[in-house]
Image 1 (cartoon, helix red, strand yellow):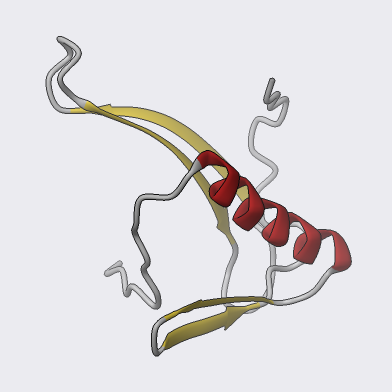
Image 2 (image 1 turned 180 degrees about the horizontal axis):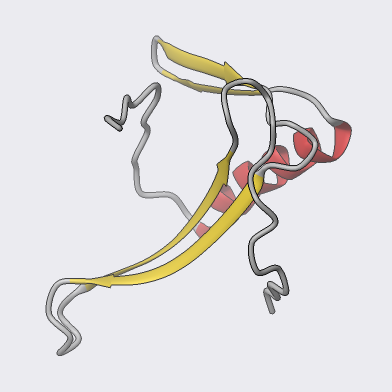
Length: 95
């Protein structure tokens, strides 16, 4: 199935700035509210269901000799009809 990017923003941020964005998303999720993403003239509003699938990935791209790029990705997924995803494996801990 082809992927359509509805919104994208990428920029260098301080750890504190990133934490602030993540807190804003967490507050919206806790409150059961829609999440609006804005950058310049672009924006998108999405309403995650009560139980979306939560995917967390840690990746290394490129060479394994220490010259690659590392990333941590957090993703919420759900069907457009508003239903959450499968239960998955659970048991995630973030320390």
